[in-house]
Length: 351
Image (tube, rainbow, N blue to C red):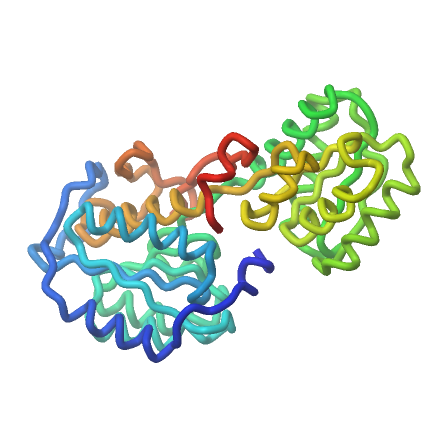
């Protein structure tokens, strides 16, 4: 998500605080039924106005614009008041002041994508002690600081989508390579290990011949793509599980003689990859749907705020058109499998 957090800011931090204060002083409707089946928790929400505060890593980020739009629609459909606040830049402690303000205003719940798993811990602990429910999404805190984490996709699901997608594009046979971020990136390495297992178990005719690292730098990733094609003349496909890497690889392939001959997939954003899908360089790539992620986080926050669930494993709630969800281990809810973006649907997304 490094690329996503670099995107331009939209509004000032001061405006964000003012917006939050205004939103939280507005009168809103009370409790709405989310179809939950938890044990009800404290049940102390009573008829208190329902106010849900979304706090992304930073404002002006199209990824969070999409997720928070989903959250806003869900909160308002449930009769609550939605507000979005956040810092200009995604620094570790920049979200603290917004958490403190929301807690002081007795927000029903804060829905947070954390810039740092620990830096916001003290503020979140104080917010929880004042009765505000804490839901993290996209990027989690340490577990003790929140009531629930809405996870966008499992590592297994992310790995399998990319491997199966590339296998389909190359006829489930031939040499492939991986263009990753840095050699020490924990999430990338976890996905790569799962990809190797999936290849061995389900795609025995596909041979992984190389794994290279672009360090999430555009030019380095571009150069690594060129080197892969030079060093492996029989290469049929590349997986790049990083938004920087896949965009750089697509840029190289789009003007090379390998366009249309070497398949490319991985994790990217529609706005980065749109032109490469439209010109035929890339058939399909993957990421979760941020609007659905925000929607699910909002329904979870409302269910917590209403005392319908507590966030413990086994709690169940309904998230509108997304369907029914059950809280899993470590107080986590999983959105589902990644979304595939291709010529048929990429025009529907703007992030």
